[in-house]
Length: 222
Length: 255
Image (cartoon, rainbow over all chains, first blue to last red; front, side):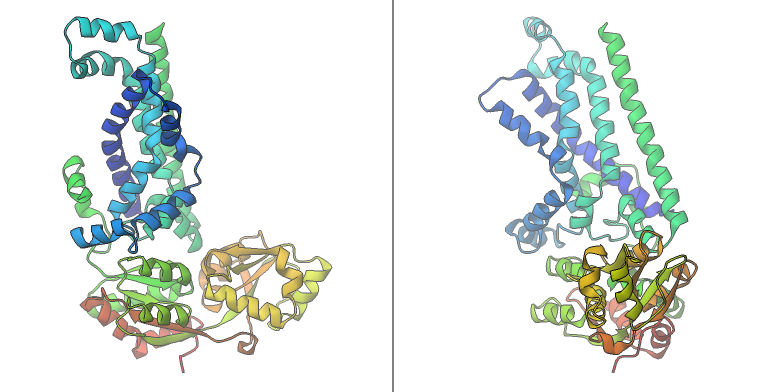
C-alpha cells in the first residue's frame, strides 16, 4: 500500500474541491439565473471535459504549460520550478478537468429554486449576495454536496491527464491511480489489489453520499 | 503559489508526505532497470546514508519530459541516442557514460505452445500456423527494447507474419506484464526483467543472441539540475559494486 500516493491523491482532491467549490457556485448561479445570447456555447464549453479524452486535455496542457510555452517559462522564472511535473501543475489540470462535475449539479440545484423566491428576497431588501447566502445556498445544498463529492472522487480516479502532465514523481505527482499502474508493471499484484480495493471503497462511499443527498432533496421538495 | 494555498486550506499532511525524503534527488530510469536499480539504490543507502527517488518508465517519454522541464537530476536511458540528443539541446551537463548493455530474451508463459528458441525459428513457424495469437513487445516507436525486439523479429523473418498479432507495451515492463500474464503466448522483453524472480514464477525465458539486434547501449547523464547526492549516485553507479549488480541482473558490461 503506497500511503504517500494515497495521501497525495487526497490532497489533490481536496485542493481541487477547495478551488472549484466557490467557482462552481458562482458560475452555476450565473448560468442558472441569466439568459444571454450564446449561453448554450458557454455551457458547452464548461461541459467539454466530460467528453474530451483525458489524453487530449493532457496533451494541450503539456504544450500550454510546458517548458517551451510562454506561460511555462513565465511560471518557472517566477516560482523557480516548472509547472508541468509538479503538484501545482496537477492542481491546474485537475481544476480544468473537473469543471463540469463542480458546475452542473449546482446549476441544476439553483435552477430548481423558483424565481419568485429570489424576487421576494429582493423585495425584502436582501442584496444579491445576502439572497445567495441566506436563501439560495441553503436550498441548493444537496447540489453542492453532489458537486463536491463527484469532484473529489473523480480527482482520485483521474489517470490519463496525470500520466501526461505528472511524470509519476513520488510525493509530488504520483497519485494513487498512477501507483496502481506502477505496481502492476512491477508484478506486485497484492500491492495493486489493496490500492484498487481502497479506491473502490472510496468510490462506493462517494456515490452513496450523492444518492443520499439527492434522495433527501426529493423528500424536501415534495 | 498553489503550495501556499494548500498549506493553509488543508490538514497538515504536506509535511509527512514522502517516504523517501522529498529533497532526495529524482532519478529517471528506463523500465528495464526496475529490479537492478532498486537493489543498487538500497546498497547506496546502506553505504552513504543517502536516498534517491527513482521513477521508472519509457526512455522516450523521459527524453520528452526532461526537454519539457521535468525535475530529474539523473537520467538512465535504455538508449544512448536520447542522452546524446538531450545533451546537444543543453539539458544535460555532458553526454554522460554508458553504464550497461541491455540484452533481450524470449519469454514464454506456462502453458504456451511456443518453443523456447532463442533464434526465433519456431516463432516464425508459429506465426504462420496460428499457434501465436498475441505476442508482446514494447512499443518500437519510443521504447528501445521494442526497437531491438523488432530488429530480432525482422532478422528471424517473423516480423511480417507477427505484425498484426503484436500487443505493444508502453514500456518494456508493461510488455513483460502482457507477455507473462496469460493474455499472450509470449513476448520479447528485457533479459533483466525476464530473469527477475517476479517473472520467473510465471514464465520461462531464453536469451536472444546479440547478433540479432543492434546493441542496446545504455547511457546515463546528469541533468543541469543535478546536486551533490545525484552526482554521488552517478559515481556510485560506475563503481564495482553497482557493476556487479547490473551483471547479475542480466546486463552486459559496457565496452
